Image 1 (cartoon, rainbow, N blue to C red):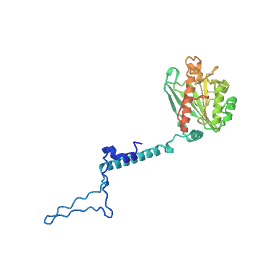
Image 2 (image 1 turned 120 degrees about the vertical axis):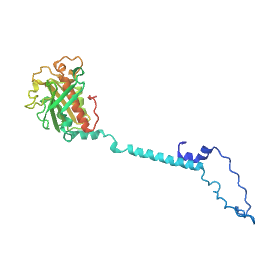
Image 3 (image 1 turned 135 degrees about the horizontal axis):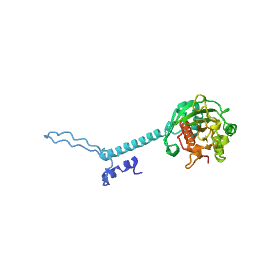
Image 4 (image 1 turned 90 degrees about the horizontal axis):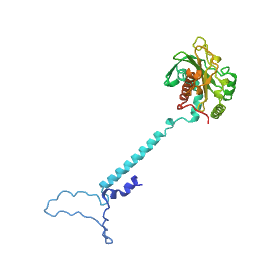
Length: 315
């Protein structure tokens, strides 16, 4: 209360000059007479002096104390107005972060509203993401026409993802800088709602569906490219992610560019663990699948207006 303009107005005299002596008690005026104040006339023979200076009636003089109190009032009103204006600016709904519902809805249209070079960049740099912290570089060599999900998966994986529905499927294949590995990455936009994505994410996590070799994604191997010989038998490592903040399922599958068959494929999450000695681990194919899937996952989140975040796991 002591910081308000009203307090300063009410106590301005004491605040600025200290307590004042009590005003003199007025003298009683006899009944029937008016308390007129007269101005004496100059005596005869004496020249009249200058007119007396006009004085303000007692109690109405605009003293420094009153002016200071008025300044405090103006300052207080200005501060209040500035605070209100600042509040209006910061509360602008256009500056507020998007809601989870808005980003989920926007994510459903990311596949057609975002350039392909944004979702699947021509070149992806992976600093320190390879085996032993090595740098990795991948170059896009093919992009599949967008399509539905018919025939895009092996039957068991298609069945596992069917409950989410399929709006559109995007795929691209990359070649690493050493030209020794090829990687297909895909993103399926689903029809289900957030609850459906959460339920599917939980099912994949609790039942370890992403680690099953009979649920590996199918490579995209167009003819005339370095991935021409990348078929089902060449799959070495893979990952499947069911996102919950956007209606997208991201996957990646990697193999050797020379077309050699792999008898013991390994999930990417296992192949990148320290100490892993399998062929997918030592060749970096697990890192290829994991790191490219991380990149595409973050690209779809950015397109939907959500911050990028680490790999999510179901509760």
